[in-house]
Length: 130
Image 1 (tube, rainbow, N blue to C red):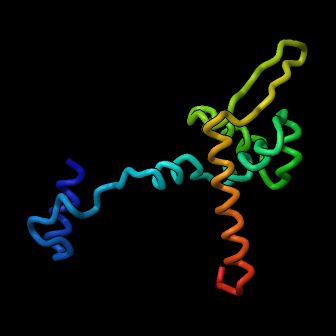
Image 2 (cartoon, helix red, strand yellow):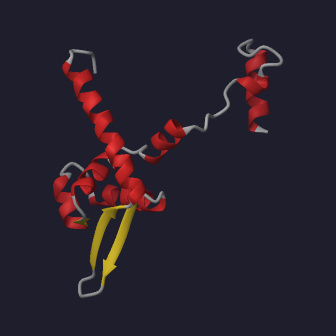
Image 3 (cartoon, one colour):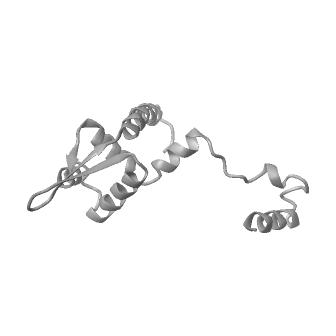
């Protein structure tokens, strides 16, 4: 329904020729798009990189990323856990001890993110505009 309305609007504006509806504006589902969806968040890559070094409790993770608020850290960790990238283990006690670590999928994503970070640093240092 929504696609039809978009295509009708595009045809009226002469952006989309008739017969091209099925070939334009379809969301792509490939590996790259999936990876980008998983890390689409301001702090997710930072969290993944920190957890890639070692498992951490919430407080240590918060200290290692000083610019993030507790609310945002909690939200991003929940999203990463729901996506299967972060494991949350609760140890009994008073107070409860919660340890976050990367799952196997999170570890492989961390390895890929390191290469992307290196590329970004080289691109940034070569004098390219930000």
